[in-house]
Length: 512
Image (cartoon, rainbow, N blue to C red; front, side, top):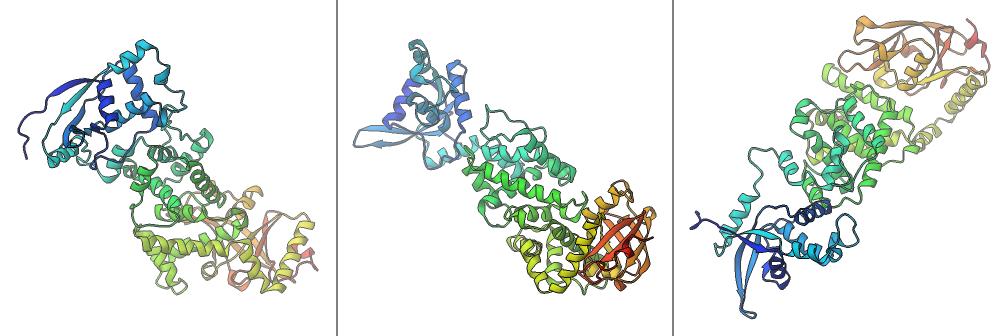
């Protein structure tokens, strides 16, 4: 409905505004006002504006009701709530103005400065008695931010300089360097560089993600999920935490510690930068689930092997006709990850699959599994001890069901480092595709003989996964048996340390 008359501007002395508020004649927090509060840095800057006698935007007030007991007409603040409450707190020395050193306290101002402050002219637009519906409409239009903005841009317009938002921006934006004048949440330079580099080097976000602020929403989603302690659908809890931690984010260090722990654990796995696990949905699940674990209990070699095995299965699932080796849970995971589903059920299922892999990779779980095959463990320990005693460098490789079926295994980080250190092969400098395979001579070593095998080292097309292929692999090893790779005069010897006892015949290993 069109207003009957235009709204005129008047001037009021700041002291008069203060007295109206403290007497109850001017209500600063009507029901329709936003719950959003200024950060203390905003408050300090605002008071400095007045002390310097610079202007600030006009305040809107409107008539409310008449108090029939005090015979006093009451008014409400339509726009300017934070400015006026900040003025009251400053004069009283309360709230964020108690025990601070950013701005001279009111009580410590000179008499002349106090007079100047209290006589400061506040521009006021008085809507008078236009009715509550019109008041709300005026408020809505004054504070409107949603002209063709997407949800991320609207949140940034509302909370972009809040503490929660500033924390998240530092994680993902390399060029964002906030100062202590605008925030209490500042990441140290080494931590910030590490996090920025992780997301940039792994190419987690596309150019479109960055343009439409989906990168910052992703970090807010991670942070909100850690705070929530459980998964939720879509982005339903982000707004809650933006509002809750807009003025102060005192728990940010504990969140940062968890994110760093997850990133360190992921880096320790030494996955290819183009790995399936750096898909946004997969990485989200890894970071959340890794933030909950005791990293000291995890066998990184086993975890890396299990993640690479699942990554290999996704290729089988989407390209091969025979998917009998893929479980229903794995199939469901692949579909959810491909869709990037934001629904609660999808997030919880992905989390369950990753949790199971983590559980299977803990030192405790590995010990329990090996306890069931004590003879095999005894052989393994003796063989590995023998290699150590003879100062023989080696690397461990554990075949999987998928790897044995195709005679192809993932060259895990330990194997890649072994080959590089022994000057046999460097995957990092190798181009992807079958035309760039590196072939090496190798032998399967039993307890009585050695059998020649052809070895191919290559990076797959597409993601560039690190692969190692052995001819006739299935005849020498079974799933989950451990292989030890040795370098004997630039020839790779492959030992099945779970099956054969090499302790009694070490010459098989060292003789040409």
